[in-house]
Image (cartoon, rainbow, N blue to C red; front, side, top):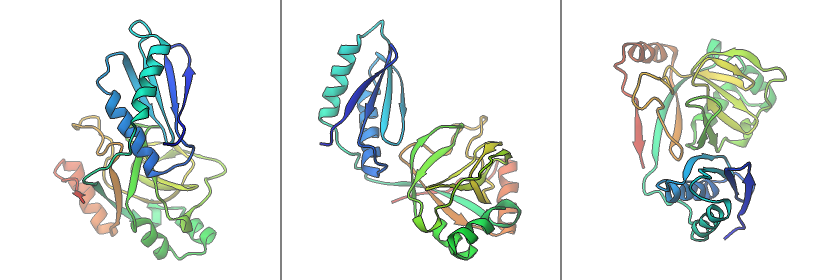
Length: 238
């Protein structure tokens, strides 16, 4: 097993630090550890990241040394999650034009035609490593290195909800109107986060996202159904 480091964070937190490498194996270990700890009443909150898990505990119920020993014991038997089935969320995206105003820049930077950028972006399933930054913002791994692209030098102050961007080696969906510095290449008519829906977020950590290119007419049709509350979000299992 790779060395795992335990580090105190304030008076009620312990950071569990894994190998500093973004990988599905490391993410699987983090999810496995979270599952083992989920029912412990001494733990108040767990915050996963790409290569670490931050555990907040109730110091009135358990001491730091006792909590650390529990984490060490659980980590000693740590295995990567071997998911029997992958849940893959199909996210329709209308690329380019007014929805993807930076796709021309991405094309120029990478030397690839826009059609090739879209093909590569839709050509794989992206693991959701964690959620954060905004409600429903998924940190995805696995972007094809041929379309890596630097962030904007000056972030935009407002990006429309549903926009799809590339930032460095990552890609993702802006679930809400927000500032942002990623290069925009398209937009989905879906609402990854809707406070009136149960559950509010379409997906969770450990699921996968597959982008699917749609035309502007298809985008408008889906958008109308989403607005009426009759669109059925698609996902498949493999």
